Length: 83
Image 1 (cartoon, rainbow, N blue to C red):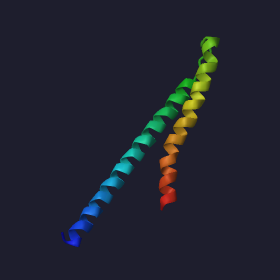
Image 2 (cartoon, rainbow, N blue to C red):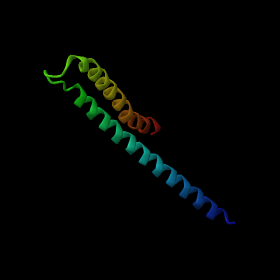
Image 3 (cartoon, rainbow, N blue to C red):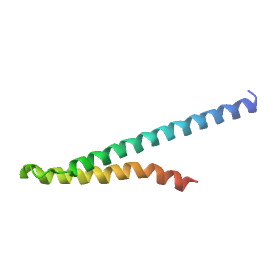
Image 4 (cartoon, one colour):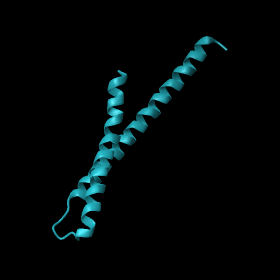
């Protein structure tokens, strides 16, 4: 097998691996932004909300905010640190 063919094959694998990694990063960013949106929605408590649901909603809202921010920012920071 000629070495040029082997090099082309390796380059093709590397390109597809990079494309898959970037697709996973886009999904993580998207899911993180959705989680942040859910966190804001959970924290938007109306005055008529029963008091027994108030604390669980607030806690879950902050968990969604922090988890979503971490999920959305980690791929961006990973890209910045690789370059």
